[in-house]
Length: 239
Image (cartoon, rainbow, N blue to C red; front, side):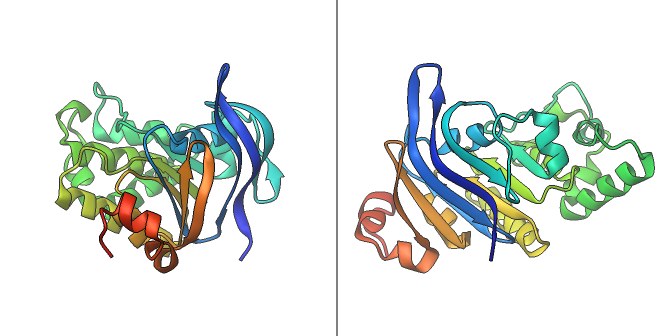
């Protein structure tokens, strides 16, 4: 299966701070790829490099075979790349529906936008119930659902998420991961940065382990779970 996102020999970071040191990574069509590793390993910088938030000094970043290096946010959205950043950032002073409408600000056809909003309501029924409520009153899990739903309004072919389960209760984490698996079944490729290594590996088709800005391991869920480093360092000796 061909890659939808391909990263080759990527060196990137922030001003003079080099974070990623020549990594190779790919996300294929209709698969979930997880990035795991210790804090400061460079997981979030991978996504930020794709979305032109980090400084890219060398390497290739291609989407469907075409370079997307240093494209602006609106250009990436038009190409079919969605991004849910860390921290469940939404517009608190706006209603749930208004947040979703912002996610579709590139859609000129109002009927098309309405159809897409109704589509995400089918996935996140709680957002339909709260559509006229201001977003500041949402729970942590509802805020994360809104952040994901807003990204889905643009109908991305690739959805990138940075720590989507951070700070959520075990039940809400389970709900979020179920939603990601459902999105994959609907044909969306997913790149997920996740601190919860065990759950990320379980739902991913393939997993990359980053350490000190380099790829330390890469493999399918079953294969990588058996690796001694994964078992002893990231899963506390389990499996």
